[in-house]
Length: 138
Image (cartoon, rainbow, N blue to C red; front, top):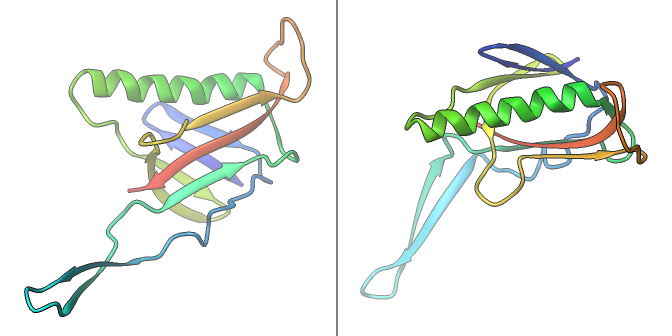
């Protein structure tokens, strides 16, 4: 089961969404610099946050339009909060029994992509979409 919980409730996501970047992140970070003598100085630390969590249909998992609109509403709520001068409230992602405190990943990508499985001029709330959610652990 996959759910995204926010201040206004929870949105159920398809159970078979893939997490393609699950192992593309390291909890260890390093910064390198040279001293005046040319020696290499390396500083190591544990990453505090920022793990990417991308959930994607990958042509296999469909989501109804009504739920896509609910996700779009969450993104719009976050934008309104930022416009008001506050940081958006964190959301909780429950991913098959693992809980993550997350926020939308906004820096360089579209945080939500939704593509209809097939074209319809006037889709209703049940029309299927392929989705990609770009979140980050905070």
